[in-house]
Length: 154
Image (cartoon, rainbow, N blue to C red; front, side, top):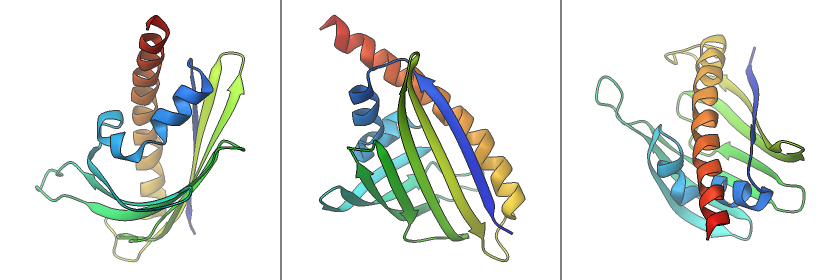
């Protein structure tokens, strides 16, 4: 068995604003509430390797990992995978940006499998990711829409 999530949200902002803000990895600690740090390790063309760190959990542990992310500005898609998989056997992500009448539909698809002995199984992680993704997407929507409003008034 493996885990799979597919979530999206429409952001009422221009495509370039949504694309630029959400693909600025060093800015993710200000964009996402869950990250305490996002450090770029290496950049090669449209690919960035980076370390993400969460805020300390209830036991004071800081979970972190290295991922690699490749953007395609032409198709407005992003492919990403964890390089340091941690509790996952694998974790891959696909981001897709689509222009709609109401704004930009930002979609995240996550495919993964948990390692034996991980704190959660595939179903438990799927539930956790679906819940947290909705929270993070709503937060990103609010922040990006606010940034777009500020940009228009300048």
